[in-house]
Length: 297
Image (tube, rainbow, N blue to C red; front, side, top):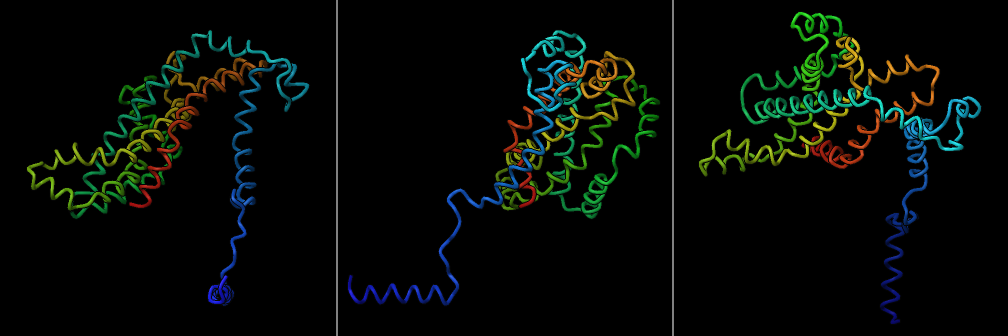
């Protein structure tokens, strides 16, 4: 090594010391403290779910003697009983119909409203956006009594449409809040180029806006479906016929009827929540990506 090289290295080290540069002390796996708290939060969230799922494979005596123990032996009879029940499949069908119809209604209406608010220049666009934003501060719990009276007067009581239409109305504010930034982030130059090529505003909406906003559409659609699937209060007020029950309401009724058979109640509960968990797990990257795009927009 030459004297010039040694001098260069010493000058670099002195410069680094003067300017406060230090060798990174992070491990290749990242900060262990962050991993520790992340694991703690994951354990807090996943432990109740695992307890319900594993509890369905136990007997009532096992749950009584060892409430926090593992199944020993594993008993799948509780799940077999629930799967063979016509009640479970009827409620699963009702929840699926309500969830899909609500999701489609919310996505279709919200993307049209968001397109008008985001891309059309008129005086009341900010007011409309603020009005939908205020809808987030109006929970269904506050208006459940007048909402039920309205549903009954419209003849929608004890029907699935009595769930679908109100859920669409309450799902629009959140969806519009997410979609408007997506549509505003589309460059105006792109719209001008489409118009110069002879494309109408409606053609621009179908050919450019919808494909470019698919991350936001996927995010809002999944969140709407999961929210509709887990809805409990509105079905409790609207539905009175057991053949129209959705799964959350069915779980509550099943728990009341089989309050002594704790293991079977846990099996019914775990089967009722598994579809929503699968849906959320499969599309979680789309949800995070969609919300990230909304924040950037």
